[in-house]
Length: 401
Image (cartoon, rainbow, N blue to C red; front, top):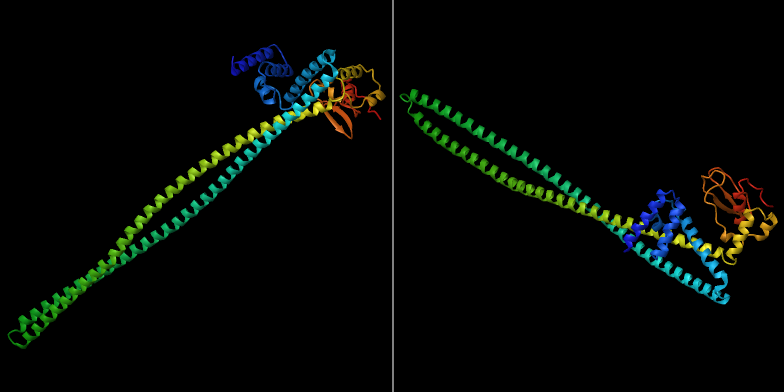
């Protein structure tokens, strides 16, 4: 059976226990046992939460601590039975302590390396984000400049169109003047012909005048025709460069539209790169939080081991039972002090309201256990043992002087 099938079997067992009315702590302890003894995996908050699908971030570490407490209690009872010599037991304890310290040091160094690598990746992602922002701003500035050039080009086109219309109107005015002149000359010619027919019989000298007028008419006609031709040529000369410049402006407008499309495509690519970098940063942040939770669990375990050093757990259990039975006076509690605090297990529920989770506080070397729901309190005591004993007595006991 592989690891996935084994995990699925554990989930089925937990579902059966949940249907039979098992509580959260029982489910967590069963998951810790199967992970540690069957799969060889050290129980962690994430692994237990994945199997049980219940419990808060503060409840599951307490259940894991309870599991390790039971394991240590069972191991110490077997050692205290006398099957291992005292010297060998001490040397084995020193060896296990050294191995634990070495494992803790290795875990810290690995965590520091992974955290530095994650910080490096985050810095690289931030740098890429800043560069993408700079490139986006440069693209926006280029687009603005292109818009300004396009506006200037359209303004130039409108100016050229106005000049073209003005030139066309001037050509029309010249043509109308020429036609009026031709009509006037035709009228004069007709009048002269009538006068010639009328006076031809009496005045021969008028013939010379008629010839002269004919010559002047031809010269005027040729002159006005040349003026019309020159005006048309001038208009064509001025219109052709305008048409060429108009074609150039249309080409520039097409180039601008292409540049705008390229800038839009680049901006979309930059946005995609920024989104990818942000996704990598979120994954690294989640990994960092998970490793921080594991480090907190290891720190709590070290604190518990240090607090339990120096007293036999059997003796600590006897003192706890005597205190719970009310057979220890206040002076005896004060003389015991905090020797057995490392083996004292805090109650999971308040004995008065049965809903709240008691919270332990320490102020000026005095311990106090209090329920946040019903405000039931043990009062300040000299040790955790004294605070737990008073708290479980339901009625608050006055604090020791």
